[in-house]
Length: 555
Image 1: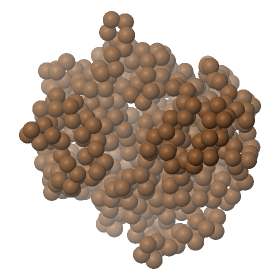
Image 2: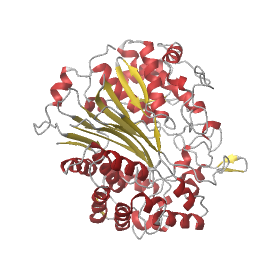
Image 3: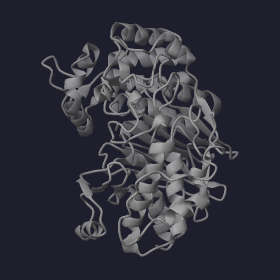
Image 4: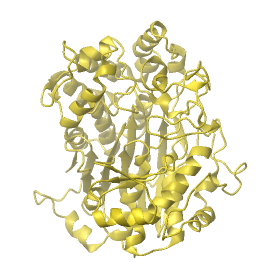
């Protein structure tokens, strides 16, 4: 695989041509639903910048894509400002003060349902705090504008997309357990909303307008926090008014590495995504450009090594020592040496990076990217975890609450909803932030941003983001070409290579010959990207073709 320039001629040519023959030089937004992308671009037309566009897009997704994200969840946001400053805002949810390491253990064993559905599954949301900080510090439009844009769609309604209807059908039984959830998402006879039906959410519209008027005080110290705490007390939950009042975002130092001369900037822990995208890139850079037919095998083996490290080392840096050596170039070379390009190599345990105890980091999902001509770039990944989160909607609020407590390790070695295992580093504790795979990433040529990218899909977020970067930087793909390629994912446990069925049969046979156990699936995740291949040139956005409602919108 011979590295090519990011500004390869094919991309530069395609960047200047859209389906309408237009060039988008003022700004671009890519998201999983077209109404959200359109609202983001409209914010820029109204005088806002890419930060305003990202926040409007995120709030809108909480309405039209509420099975994936919303103000009842959290996010990681990377902002590149026109002066070159990079801001990393950690809005990850936090465990309530009453959380304990064994809160999901009954009779000596973890009970998965407790961390996935209902009151105990809920952590304190962080999205509102990050969005408000981003708008008031780095945006140009008033906070109320952002909330009103989403409130209008919640009030007027929108046609239920296919994916939305499918997700509803898959969790209808759990939603039916909670009267407020049932009233919003199910018909009177218990059947879920169907594709094409108009979906109106008046309580959510009311909540968004109250949020627009009252800001985070309404959410964290006012009516919303009180409503959640009251419901928790009545339903065996742990989250209290004090937990909401204690919530604070973290301003993190961005994690940086280089790959083939490009600067790669991501989120540090409690994101495992930034760490392991960087770690895998280091491994592959050290391994060197192999034969094209070795690409999938080699990358899968690198993924496996990184995820073995994730299971042991990663957690909230305020509670556990997360070694910076995981992204050390020399450590990447030592892991690269373990890869046999001809066959699968068993990985029994994690590696040990240099200065593991001394040099440490500071104490279902959606992604959207935006950029503007002034030089603002945003990569934001937002989540409520699995489809419709905890399945809980607090009465009168219309807000789906997350089930992020499932991103903790219920007990060492116990898999979560995505099959990921964790160790003591990721056990629940009061105020602790669960480990996340969210990987918002900005790629630079020198000091110039050229790509904002990220993904949705649990642990496959890491592999999706990684693969897109590899295809763009090493093979000269346009973002749209990179996102359309068949994907694969290896997370160490379970020890299998998940691949999309669209992968060529000859490649599948080759992987089996090398010893991979294949798990074929229809689709892996959803990635969104915005790029600018030439300084001052047009923006090129790409939404994942697996998400039929998605769109990249520019102006």
